[in-house]
Amino acid sequence: MSTALNRLGALEAARKLQRRELTAVQLVRACFARIEQRENTIHAWTALQKQAALDHAEALDRGALRGPLHGLPLGVKDLFDTADLPTRYGSPIYERHNPGLDAAAVALCRHAGAVVIGKTVTTEFATYQAGPTRNPRNEAYTPGGSSSGSAAAVADDMVPFALGSQTAGSIIRPASYCGIVGFKPTFGAIPRAGVKSLAESLDTVGGFARSVPDVALFASVLMRDPRMLDLAYDGKPRVGMYRSLQWRHAQSETKEAFAQAAATLSRAGAHVEEVPLPPEDCMLVQLHSDIMAFEASQSLAYERLEHAAQLSAKIQAVLEAGAQITAEEHIKNLARAAESRARVEQWFDKYDILLAPSASGEAPFADLGTGDPQFSRAWTLFGLPCLNLPFATGPQGLPVGLQLIGRRYDDHRTLAIAAWVHERLLAAREPDIGASDMWPRG
Image (cartoon, rainbow, N blue to C red; front, side, top):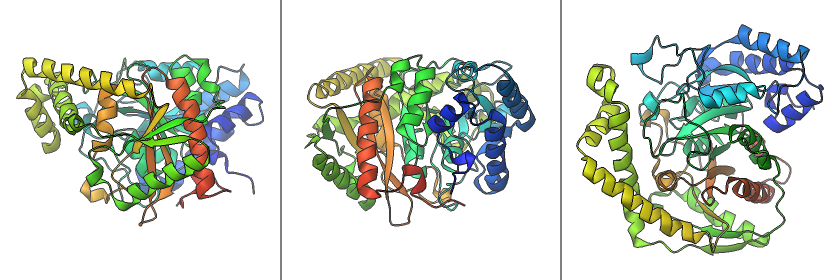
């Protein structure tokens, strides 16, 4: 049986489009058909532009190849400004906001040939107040946050790729909950211009797709680095298994996935070793939280000071906490973060990559919120490249992934090792299926 066009991975679809075996109009129509079938259940989108997307696709089909993303449908998190779609940042304050300009990441994707089909749901200013989006694997559960709509849209085969951002755990956790690959590159590797700021020293642009080669395709465009397309890796990686001092919060399914990964990779020839837990790591979650709160109270000063009544109680609590932190305390916190980052960077003299939990376990029920980012806070604080690799299943039949972490500025090698690792984890679990086929669809 042939694969439905909307289920094609980004790289496979891109190759077909480049060879003119598939038209952009066919692919865009297939994605909109899926959206029309499922959006009333999943609620992944805040705005769609079907006719404009089809017109763009038709123009691409008539003309020369535009670039590596020629004809690929793209979802854009509603934290990114777009010239042709409203941008609300998940807040009623910006209900009628139309920036008229594209964020840099959106512009890079369009220039490479991508077709923007709509804006995906974000939590309020990329924090904790959940939007309407549901987990495609089971609608009673959250897709995670803050990149809720982007993760859900990719997981539900509405688009092959979607832009997201991470300030705490907003790419890795939704990717884990939804059972897809999420990539948060090195801090600053993808431009943030035109993305609503939450915390200047933490905000990172990345995205979601269905495989490591798929996210590598988009990374090659967004990072202007064609090396990302070469995922050849012939070595046997040195893998540091890092439980973290939040391990006590890990649920049984995460602990089982962690043990399974260690055994599988060891059998595959990797050198696997558990990383000792430095006692000073106990402060990292709170340190990240304090830095984020202070910087959010600054970045969202206008909203905090002029539109407080239109903010949720959850974000008001964050901003009020941040406003209580002094500039002197913030500078000391940044210094502590730099000291910890330098210590962790030394680990990569011994290990090629680290593996750690992506989240405490399966997605929680939607009415309980978007989940806790505690397992991602430290890696975001350090600005390290991270990927969620889905391969396991929890007791509710929902996805469970692990987080692969690489050395700062070593994104290309991190992606190559991630492809090696993910291939072996999937092969050990289900020899005949890929990650996107592991969980039922609606």
